[in-house]
Image 1: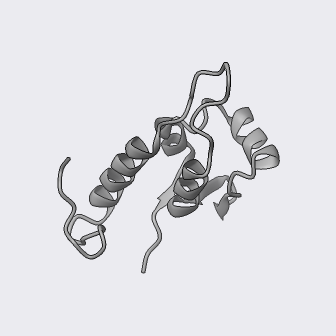
Image 2: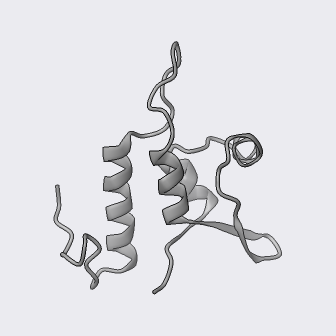
Length: 100
């Protein structure tokens, strides 16, 4: 089964990172998944690893404003990305995705 890959721009859209230095720090310090090298200057992340990492993060730390989306927003974006990538395949336990 093909794996959905996320590029740097997708990580920015998800709110995971705002710049490449933050991404490097998250990989080094926050156990963010390492990228897969697709070419000399091309890297991508397995979507399921990114979603698992996001789901395992605390929602809010004391005195901080959350910078990443919550679990519901992550699920909605995941469903949207999967629906766009594989429009003819159900991704919700074998059931077709429905708009929420």
